[in-house]
Every structure is written in structure tokens, then in C-alpha cells.
Amino acid sequence: MADDLNLRLKHLIVETLKLEEVKPEEIPDHEPLFGGGLDLDSIDGLELALRLEKEYGIKIGSSEESRKALESVEVLANYIRKHGRAS
Image 1: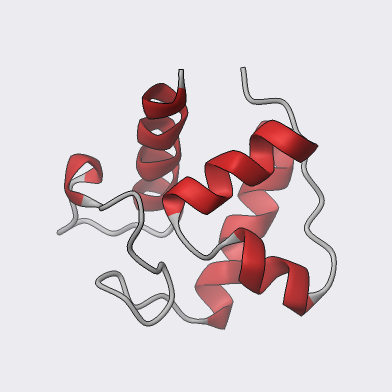
Image 2: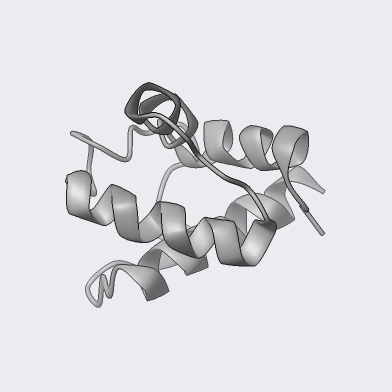
């Protein structure tokens, strides 16, 4: 179920990046992760990519691929469905 993966990803983002003031349910599915409401930076992206590799078996290669895969929660969920273990 798409919403289930999106919510799991939101929890993973909050936990990994220690975003204590952010509730996972409040992260919009389509809002940019970088430059959007969360205003993540490149270090956040690296931490997130490493955690996603462990959790879902995805390997995000180049910075271009990373920028595309981590665009939003929805885009990331679709990337995991296509390249990783979504269950």
C-alpha cells in the first residue's frame, strides 16, 4: 500500500535525522525534501541514503541520482518500489 510505505519513510526520515520538532504525519508526500519545509542539506541526504540502503537495499549512486530519488517522500517511495525491497 502506497500510503503505508510513505508513512514508514516519514518516520525513517524523522528518526534518522533526529528531527524532534517534526511529526512524521505532517510531512507532505509531494513537498521537496531539500529546499522545502524540512530544508534538508547534503549531509542529511548522505545520512538518509545510508539508512535507506540498510533498510530497503537500495544503492543511490551519483549525486544526480540522489537528488532525483530524494526529491520528495512520494518520489522516494516510488524509487524504493522500483529498485529496492518495499516490504
